[in-house]
Image 1 (cartoon, rainbow, N blue to C red):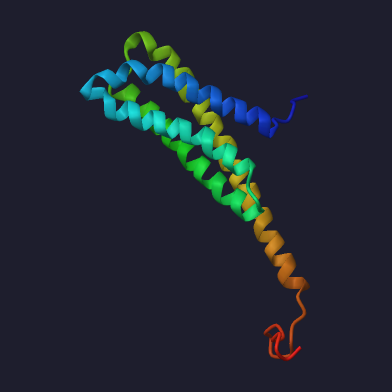
Image 2 (cartoon, rainbow, N blue to C red):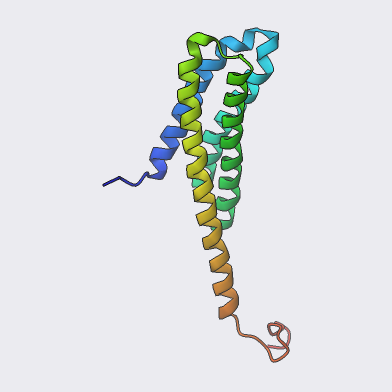
Length: 149
């Protein structure tokens, strides 16, 4: 039976990905031709980790959904930059296996956060509908005004 991943597990996993990507791209910062891609990949991967931590501290489901949406986008951007750098030959051939492993890890996280976003958004919409259904309605269809109640 598979163990369900906790938020702490995901925080650790996103941090490990960011650190591993930092180690991969650090040598690429020195060359003008590779610097831009290295910076973009580094920013996207660290943003996944930082924004997931922020999402876990969300003060409401609405805030959580917004932050997880950002995490989902940044995880996908991390996959993009790893793919681009591989196809463009930016990653040295000695680091290609590590880059492929990191791309797989980023794809897994992107799928996890996409599913998390869909589920959290669905629950948010259901909560809104339940609140609206519980509100008393006036005969005109609008809720009673606080001034007339």
